Length: 146
Image (cartoon, rainbow, N blue to C red):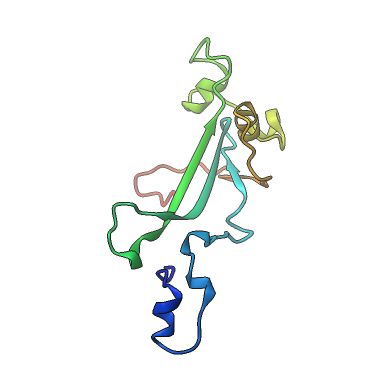
């Protein structure tokens, strides 16, 4: 949790030393490790996930010490194809109704880059990794699936 901002006058009350980093708490950056940074792609459908940890301001919080909080932001991009028929192609693969090899069809190309480039927004280059690299299919009920 970041330290609350303190003016120079408030810091001088505690002694002659002033910590300038405590003047602006809105410039704190949270970075992820190299294992957490990559974008994840489902191997069975054209869907990518970007999971980030960010430091966000809680505007409803009145306590300045607890104003900034860590949050997990999950962004999902799904390519549904041309959208003409939900029972074939990418759309059916996203619903789990069709076989689809996302790494075979798209390779290392990012779905997220296609969507974000249409809006003029650029996302930092990410390594694309599989959500399920061993392609294990286990049930939810009592099979320790995750």
